[in-house]
Length: 548
Image (cartoon, rainbow, N blue to C red; front, side):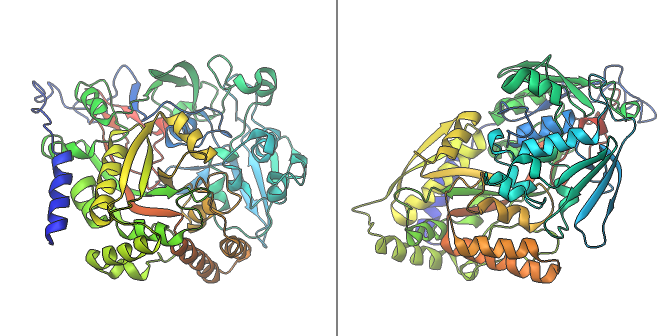
C-alpha cells in the first residue's frame, strides 16, 4: 500500500471507529423456547413493529418512489401478480391469466372474492382506472415509465394521447385485457409494482389529493391504514375483506420512520422493534459478535451510486471531469473497510440480473494507482489543480450510513485530486424534491432497487424522458438502444442492445456507481416465516409472531 492510501485508510477508520457499548444487559436465555415446545406456537398478541427508514413521501402508489413507501404499499395494496420470493411470480388480485402466442395480449381473470377494505368488490374496472391514472401526466408520477410496454403508454405520458387511449380494457367486471407494444418478457413482474396498483376511484374522486390518509384510504391488500402520526409511526391493521385474510396471521403492524441507524439499533435492543430497516456500518462488528443469530445479510438487487447533475456547472458538457471523479473512488476500500457487509464494488451500472451479462469497463482491471493517475490527467485537462481545486456539494438524505459514504468518498476525492467538498443532508421528502428540481444539486446520493429482475429496469431510469433521471442526462444513442431492446424478442440480441447502452452510460458518466447492495438487518427470533428476498419484498401477511 502506498503512503497516500495508508494515510487515507487510517483517516477513514478514525471516522468510523466508535464504541458500541456492552452486550444487552440481562438478555440471557428466555424462560421458554421461542414458539413454545413445538416451535410453532403463536403469541397471543399478533403485532409486528418494523423500522422503516424515513417518513414516507406519500401512500398514493402512483406518486411515491422510495423504499419506505414501497414497504407500506405492499401491505396496503395488491397488484395483479405477487412475488413472495418462494414460488416466484404468482397470482395476486388476478386469479389467473392467459398470454397470446405473439406475447402482445394478456387477459386476466379477477378473483371473485377480491374486496377493497370497505367491502366493495375489486374489479377489472379498478385496474383500468388505476393504470390510466398512473400514466396520466396530470398525476405527476415519476414511475409512469414502468408502464411503457403497454400500448400507447409512451404517447400518453408525453401528452400526445389521452389516458383513455391506453391499451387496457375491462371485457367485463371480472376480465381485464392489456395490450402491449411488443413482447415484454418481464411484464408480469411489472404488475406487482406500485405503478400498476389499483386505487379506489370513489375515494380518489371524493377527497382529491388528500385521499391517501387515515379514514379515507381504501386499499385492496392484506392491510388497511388505521393511523399515521408524522415522524412517529404508521399503523396498519388487517383488512378483514381481503380475499386471503384467513391465511394472514399478524393483526397489526407498526412502521417507524427512524432515519438514524444507531437509534434504530438501540430500539431493537430494547425490544421496541422486531425488525430493523437497516444497520449502521460502524456497529456491524459488534452486531456480528453479539447478535449473530439475529443478523440477516442477503443478496439485494440494487446499486448505490452518486448522481451528477449534468444540467449545470461543473458537470455540464464535461465528461472528462465526471470520469475523473469516477476513477478517483477506491471501491475496494469502500466495501472492505467502510460498508463491510459484503457489498460488491460496482464499476458498471446493472447488477447481476437474469438473462444479462454485467458490463465491466476496461479501467476496472487497473490498479487504483493507475486509475488515480488517469483521474489526475483528466482533472487537469478540465482546468483544475491543487492551486485551483474543484469545490463541490454532496447532497444526501438524512441517514447515518449515507453520511458515512459521503465522508469516505469526499476523503478519496480530496486525497487523489485535492477536491474540496461540503456535505449537505436533507429530510427524505425535501431531498427527493431537491433532486428532482436539479436547480441546486451537484453530486447527490442515490440508490436503485430493481422492481423486477431484468436489466431493462435499471437501464430505463436513465432514459432522457424518465422522471427518475435526476442527473438530467440526455443521450440519443442510449435512448435508441433502449428502444431496440424493448422491441426485441430474441433474448440474446436484447441483452446485446442493453449491454451497448450500458457502455454508453458508463463512458459518458452522468453517475458514479459505488457498490451493489446487500440487505442487512436484525430480525427477532420470534418473527416467524421471515425469508430474505432478492428485492427485499417482506410482506407482513407472510409473517407471524411466535410465542416468546
